[in-house]
Length: 48
Image 1 (tube, one colour):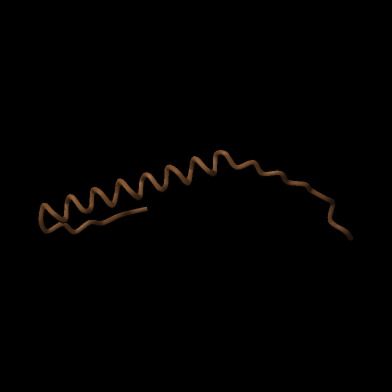
Image 2: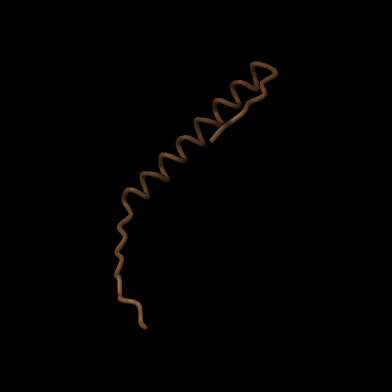
């Protein structure tokens, strides 16, 4: 995965940092929810 940022002034830098922090927080929350997810799988033999 690759991210490219074009920054032209300090305001852009601050906005980009804030957006990045929000994205990281959302990703962390998502991963946390996934780690709490319990999955139950039942396998049955294929019918011939």
